Amino acid sequence: MRLLFLTSRLPYPPDRGDRSRVYHFLRILSAEHEITLVTFSASESERPYLIHLQPFCKQIHVIDWPLWRSVAAVATNVWRRLPLQVLYYRSAAMAKFVDALLNTQSFDAVYVHLFRMAPYLINHKNQHRILDLTDVVSNEIDLSLPYRPFLWRWLYRFELPRIRQYEAEVAAQFEECWLIAQADQKTLTAVAPQAHSYVVPIGVKIRSDLAAATVSQPPILLFVGNMSIFHNVDAVNYLVKQIFPLVRSFMPACQLHLVGAGVSSKIRELESSPGVSVSGFVSDLDVVYRETAVFVAPMRFAAGLQTKVLDAMGAGLPVVTTSLINAGLGAIPEQDLLLADDASACAAQISRLLNDNRLREKIGQAGRNFVQLRFSWDAVAKRMHQIGQHLSTQNDL
Image 1 (tube, rainbow, N blue to C red):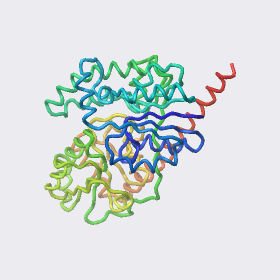
Image 2 (tube, one colour):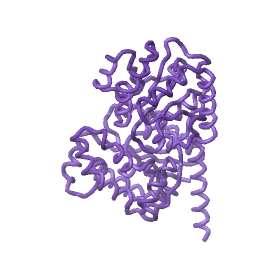
Image 3 (cartoon, one colour):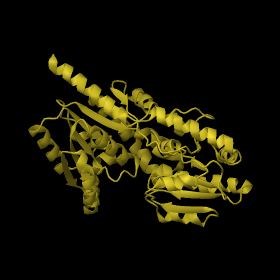
Image 4 (spheres, one colour):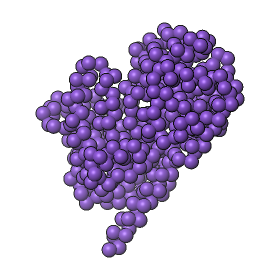
């Protein structure tokens, strides 16, 4: 099939969930389909990344969209009752280009990544349009409100109704919507029962088993995540300020490593806490995983699937996370991972793993098996094959 991909960010490097999902979709689908990618680019510095996408795409079209244009788009359209992120990517140049492309070229299906890009396909009802919501953003924002600073909390309380309404409206207008987890599909169905939704999960690289047989001395805890994303910012602050001091009270030599791109000065300041180090982006996580005793992911709010958790499980690391995160994963507590929903419980679960090598090995192996069975990038190839069969049947009628 001939596929058109429409994205708000250049899907490279695959260093955060949204870019990674699109990058791997391109990689997998290019084996059997012809792909045209149309994307925004925030700066000239992203241009060298195109070489990494060219093997997967017959054509790549880039619309420059620097920050000042985004700010201007919001300022001049704020009167419209649309979510700010839709206004942020409101571009006459993109609209004109997409319209011209669809009027002059034929595509079997159009993949639109995130609802912020939905306006460019709303009026093209003769296409098979796939809206990859990934997760239900309004749900995550709602859960995050108690943890946000006052001004941001006020802004998001203003923004939340717009997002809720828009998500439901566009989900109903597209031929199908993709979500990353069944929990998000259930949430969307409640607000947009007429939406045709499908669960298309992320895949995980199953690494060789990297978990050490015994805990190294001093024992190392690990958190991995993009530090510019608010649920990760909240999680590392919660981990450093509330959980880790409890762990250090019974294991004073224990260390905590925070790894991920987008490290701000505020995150860097966490290194002033005893035993805490901030590494920033690491290109080879295998090296980090080999020295890790326990992977900790104490996100108090989020939506969809957390790639960081699945990746650690796929490497055989024992994971401690929250019930909220596991709602998206669907793992079996006490078998595939350990759960804790407050600081003392999290410290206690970490203590169990640090003091019991057999438990660490059991949880790590079960988690690895769980990920291997449930999370594969082949899911997107399977769904696209189903779409192709459906369209072929329609054309035969």
